[in-house]
Length: 130
Image (cartoon, rainbow, N blue to C red; front, top):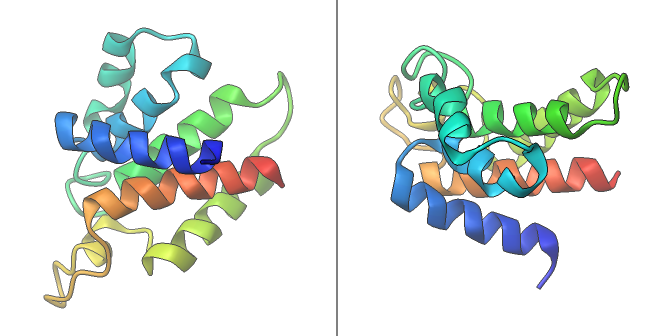
């Protein structure tokens, strides 16, 4: 099994335990972030249920973006990589806004939270591999 697959499976398992999509992604990368579990939980706490409580960007995508920035070599710009990550996630999940992913306005869910976490980690790994 590839590292991408292992991390994606780990993220889904963590999501089932902690409930917060952003925290699940952050904890999946705890080995690379140099922060304690408590710090990562605090960092990701406001991003559960998407930024703004379903209103904006999916928490899993926010977490993946945080990991991208925190693991980039010092001084290296990550804007292009951040955009690529979002594009990869959108292609897998159908949207990036939690409200749209959960079908709040349409009644049609595009992507479950577990799949959002999985897709965020896969997209991050794919973007990091170039």
